[in-house]
Length: 214
Image (cartoon, rainbow, N blue to C red):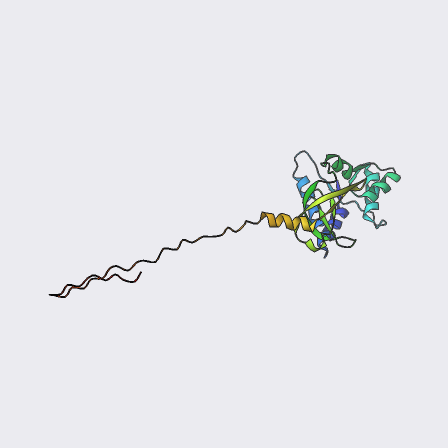
Protein backbone atom coordinates (compact mmCIF):
# COMPACT_ATOMS: atom_id res chain seq x y z
CA UNK A 1 0.00 0.00 0.00
CA UNK A 2 1.06 3.56 -0.69
CA UNK A 3 -0.25 6.37 1.53
CA UNK A 4 -1.67 9.51 -0.01
CA UNK A 5 0.70 11.72 1.98
CA UNK A 6 3.66 10.04 0.24
CA UNK A 7 2.15 10.87 -3.15
CA UNK A 8 1.75 14.49 -2.09
CA UNK A 9 5.40 14.55 -1.02
CA UNK A 10 6.49 13.10 -4.37
CA UNK A 11 4.45 15.69 -6.22
CA UNK A 12 6.06 18.52 -4.25
CA UNK A 13 9.52 17.15 -5.03
CA UNK A 14 8.63 16.72 -8.71
CA UNK A 15 7.59 20.39 -8.85
CA UNK A 16 10.78 21.59 -7.16
CA UNK A 17 12.84 24.37 -8.71
CA UNK A 18 15.96 22.26 -8.17
CA UNK A 19 16.52 20.12 -11.27
CA UNK A 20 18.03 17.21 -9.34
CA UNK A 21 15.12 17.04 -6.87
CA UNK A 22 12.63 17.48 -9.69
CA UNK A 23 14.08 14.53 -11.61
CA UNK A 24 14.01 12.35 -8.50
CA UNK A 25 10.38 13.22 -7.81
CA UNK A 26 9.33 12.47 -11.37
CA UNK A 27 11.27 9.22 -11.32
CA UNK A 28 9.44 8.21 -8.11
CA UNK A 29 6.05 8.86 -9.71
CA UNK A 30 7.10 6.97 -12.84
CA UNK A 31 8.21 3.95 -10.81
CA UNK A 32 4.93 3.90 -8.89
CA UNK A 33 3.03 3.99 -12.18
CA UNK A 34 5.11 1.10 -13.51
CA UNK A 35 4.40 -0.91 -10.35
CA UNK A 36 0.66 -0.38 -10.83
CA UNK A 37 0.94 -2.00 -14.27
CA UNK A 38 2.56 -5.17 -12.92
CA UNK A 39 -0.13 -7.85 -13.06
CA UNK A 40 1.22 -9.78 -10.08
CA UNK A 41 1.24 -6.72 -7.78
CA UNK A 42 -1.69 -5.01 -6.15
CA UNK A 43 -0.97 -1.37 -5.30
CA UNK A 44 -3.45 0.19 -2.90
CA UNK A 45 -3.43 3.94 -2.16
CA UNK A 46 -4.72 4.63 1.33
CA UNK A 47 -6.02 7.92 2.66
CA UNK A 48 -4.88 7.37 6.27
CA UNK A 49 -3.12 10.40 7.69
CA UNK A 50 -1.82 11.46 11.06
CA UNK A 51 -2.38 15.21 11.41
CA UNK A 52 -0.54 15.35 14.72
CA UNK A 53 2.63 14.03 13.04
CA UNK A 54 4.38 16.44 10.70
CA UNK A 55 7.28 14.40 9.30
CA UNK A 56 6.47 12.05 6.42
CA UNK A 57 8.91 9.43 7.74
CA UNK A 58 7.17 9.35 11.11
CA UNK A 59 3.78 9.14 9.40
CA UNK A 60 5.02 6.04 7.56
CA UNK A 61 6.10 4.43 10.82
CA UNK A 62 2.70 5.11 12.41
CA UNK A 63 0.92 3.70 9.36
CA UNK A 64 3.06 0.54 9.47
CA UNK A 65 2.13 0.09 13.14
CA UNK A 66 -1.60 0.42 12.39
CA UNK A 67 -1.57 -2.14 9.57
CA UNK A 68 1.22 -4.26 11.10
CA UNK A 69 3.09 -3.94 7.86
CA UNK A 70 6.66 -3.54 6.70
CA UNK A 71 8.27 -0.43 5.25
CA UNK A 72 10.10 -0.70 1.94
CA UNK A 73 12.55 2.15 1.60
CA UNK A 74 16.02 3.22 0.53
CA UNK A 75 16.15 5.96 3.17
CA UNK A 76 18.95 5.15 5.61
CA UNK A 77 17.62 7.32 8.44
CA UNK A 78 14.06 6.02 8.09
CA UNK A 79 15.46 2.51 8.18
CA UNK A 80 17.18 3.12 11.52
CA UNK A 81 14.28 5.01 13.16
CA UNK A 82 11.74 2.38 12.12
CA UNK A 83 13.87 -0.43 13.49
CA UNK A 84 14.21 1.42 16.80
CA UNK A 85 10.41 1.58 17.04
CA UNK A 86 9.99 -2.11 16.28
CA UNK A 87 8.83 -1.77 12.67
CA UNK A 88 10.34 -4.17 10.14
CA UNK A 89 12.06 -2.59 7.17
CA UNK A 90 13.01 -3.99 3.77
CA UNK A 91 16.07 -2.02 2.69
CA UNK A 92 16.12 -1.55 -1.09
CA UNK A 93 19.77 -0.46 -0.98
CA UNK A 94 20.87 -3.78 0.49
CA UNK A 95 19.02 -5.65 -2.26
CA UNK A 96 20.36 -3.36 -4.98
CA UNK A 97 23.94 -3.57 -3.68
CA UNK A 98 23.81 -7.35 -3.80
CA UNK A 99 22.80 -7.17 -7.46
CA UNK A 100 25.22 -4.45 -8.59
CA UNK A 101 28.31 -5.45 -10.55
CA UNK A 102 31.54 -5.22 -8.60
CA UNK A 103 33.68 -2.22 -9.51
CA UNK A 104 37.38 -2.50 -8.77
CA UNK A 105 40.04 0.23 -8.52
CA UNK A 106 41.90 0.68 -11.77
CA UNK A 107 38.90 -0.06 -13.96
CA UNK A 108 37.68 2.52 -16.46
CA UNK A 109 34.07 3.61 -16.77
CA UNK A 110 32.27 6.18 -18.90
CA UNK A 111 30.08 8.65 -17.00
CA UNK A 112 28.20 11.90 -17.60
CA UNK A 113 29.40 14.71 -15.29
CA UNK A 114 26.20 16.26 -13.96
CA UNK A 115 27.41 18.83 -11.42
CA UNK A 116 30.39 20.00 -9.40
CA UNK A 117 31.46 18.24 -6.22
CA UNK A 118 32.05 19.55 -2.74
CA UNK A 119 35.82 19.52 -2.97
CA UNK A 120 38.00 21.60 -5.29
CA UNK A 121 37.86 20.66 -8.98
CA UNK A 122 35.52 17.70 -8.43
CA UNK A 123 32.71 16.60 -10.70
CA UNK A 124 29.79 14.36 -9.76
CA UNK A 125 28.10 11.75 -11.95
CA UNK A 126 25.43 9.11 -11.33
CA UNK A 127 25.13 5.60 -12.71
CA UNK A 128 21.82 4.27 -14.00
CA UNK A 129 21.17 2.58 -10.65
CA UNK A 130 21.67 5.86 -8.75
CA UNK A 131 25.23 5.19 -7.57
CA UNK A 132 27.14 8.43 -7.07
CA UNK A 133 30.50 8.76 -8.80
CA UNK A 134 32.83 11.51 -7.53
CA UNK A 135 35.50 12.37 -10.09
CA UNK A 136 38.62 14.41 -9.36
CA UNK A 137 39.78 16.98 -11.91
CA UNK A 138 36.41 16.89 -13.72
CA UNK A 139 34.78 20.17 -12.78
CA UNK A 140 35.54 21.65 -16.20
CA UNK A 141 33.80 18.69 -17.85
CA UNK A 142 30.32 19.36 -16.41
CA UNK A 143 27.74 18.52 -19.06
CA UNK A 144 30.04 16.11 -20.90
CA UNK A 145 30.59 12.34 -21.00
CA UNK A 146 34.12 11.25 -20.14
CA UNK A 147 36.15 8.14 -19.30
CA UNK A 148 37.34 8.00 -15.69
CA UNK A 149 39.61 5.65 -13.82
CA UNK A 150 38.21 4.19 -10.59
CA UNK A 151 40.42 4.92 -7.59
CA UNK A 152 38.32 3.56 -4.71
CA UNK A 153 34.85 2.29 -3.77
CA UNK A 154 33.09 3.14 -0.51
CA UNK A 155 30.42 0.64 0.55
CA UNK A 156 27.96 1.60 3.30
CA UNK A 157 24.49 0.48 4.37
CA UNK A 158 23.15 3.64 2.72
CA UNK A 159 24.60 2.66 -0.64
CA UNK A 160 27.78 2.69 -2.64
CA UNK A 161 29.98 5.60 -3.66
CA UNK A 162 32.60 5.36 -6.38
CA UNK A 163 35.61 7.66 -6.51
CA UNK A 164 37.52 8.18 -9.71
CA UNK A 165 39.89 10.48 -11.53
CA UNK A 166 39.85 12.03 -14.97
CA UNK A 167 43.27 12.22 -16.61
CA UNK A 168 43.13 15.25 -18.89
CA UNK A 169 46.45 14.55 -20.62
CA UNK A 170 45.56 10.94 -21.35
CA UNK A 171 42.16 11.99 -22.69
CA UNK A 172 43.68 14.53 -25.06
CA UNK A 173 46.37 12.11 -26.21
CA UNK A 174 43.71 9.52 -27.03
CA UNK A 175 41.72 12.17 -28.85
CA UNK A 176 44.74 13.19 -30.90
CA UNK A 177 45.57 9.59 -31.75
CA UNK A 178 42.03 9.00 -32.95
CA UNK A 179 42.16 11.87 -35.44
CA UNK A 180 42.97 10.79 -39.03
CA UNK A 181 46.41 11.69 -40.36
CA UNK A 182 46.36 13.92 -43.43
CA UNK A 183 48.34 12.31 -46.27
CA UNK A 184 50.21 14.51 -48.76
CA UNK A 185 48.53 14.81 -52.14
CA UNK A 186 50.74 14.61 -55.22
CA UNK A 187 49.36 16.16 -58.37
CA UNK A 188 50.83 15.06 -61.67
CA UNK A 189 51.71 17.95 -63.93
CA UNK A 190 51.47 17.28 -67.61
CA UNK A 191 54.57 18.24 -69.63
CA UNK A 192 54.19 21.37 -71.75
CA UNK A 193 52.89 20.64 -75.18
CA UNK A 194 55.23 21.11 -78.11
CA UNK A 195 53.80 23.40 -80.72
CA UNK A 196 53.34 21.69 -84.07
CA UNK A 197 55.67 22.34 -87.00
CA UNK A 198 54.32 25.16 -89.12
CA UNK A 199 54.86 25.14 -92.93
CA UNK A 200 54.00 27.88 -95.35
CA UNK A 201 53.81 27.24 -99.10
CA UNK A 202 53.89 30.09 -101.61
CA UNK A 203 53.28 29.20 -105.18
CA UNK A 204 56.51 29.03 -107.08
CA UNK A 205 58.60 29.12 -103.90
CA UNK A 206 59.93 26.35 -101.77
CA UNK A 207 60.14 27.13 -98.08
CA UNK A 208 61.78 24.83 -95.63
CA UNK A 209 59.61 24.02 -92.61
CA UNK A 210 60.55 25.91 -89.48
CA UNK A 211 59.98 24.24 -86.15
CA UNK A 212 58.39 26.17 -83.36
CA UNK A 213 60.24 27.02 -80.18
CA UNK A 214 61.12 24.07 -77.97
